[in-house]
Image (cartoon, rainbow, N blue to C red; front, side, top):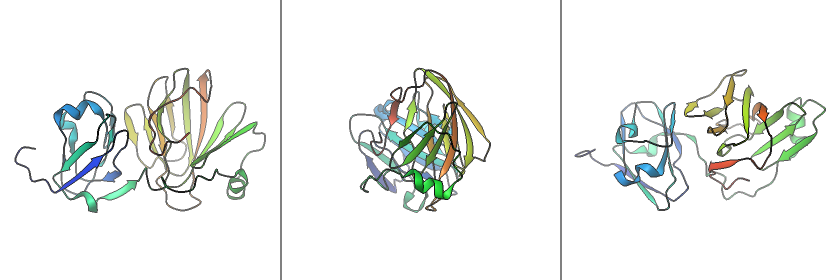
Length: 230
């Protein structure tokens, strides 16, 4: 970006990320210190990169989606050749960071959706809810929330999208506004996440989750956990 005019800057604290934005109709250039390239995770369009990132990866095509995650121990300074304040925000990981953390009530979901009987357990959180059955889980993700980007050591997971057109991170790819009945496989030690970009209060994203291997709720490594979700 030598000789390119810088029109916008932002500082990203350690273990935080930018908003997930949609670029304008012009090519976007992101500039960071070369020594920091090893410290970032990057969403650029349909790519999710965690290593081997170069300056060429920081060129964002017109109308493409982008997000930078700071995995380093110090504040990361980002410079842009556009004023990105007008770019459409697809997902703000910190919108509800200071909100009261009230766990979702299963009765709320039962009023909205036809929840199958026979579940053997639940996992209520303030950003998602899980109904557990013998052979699968039903995961509900609140509007404008996302699960952490995570990996598992001892199980493969299979997701079927039932409702909501979520954004899915699956291994090193990002899939936007996914249609119902689409299936994703996440082998052991691969990255995956669910983001629900819907804004309607009742527009939950719903995913049916199956697994192979040893299922353990503690078998989870959260590599990006924007609101310190548990």
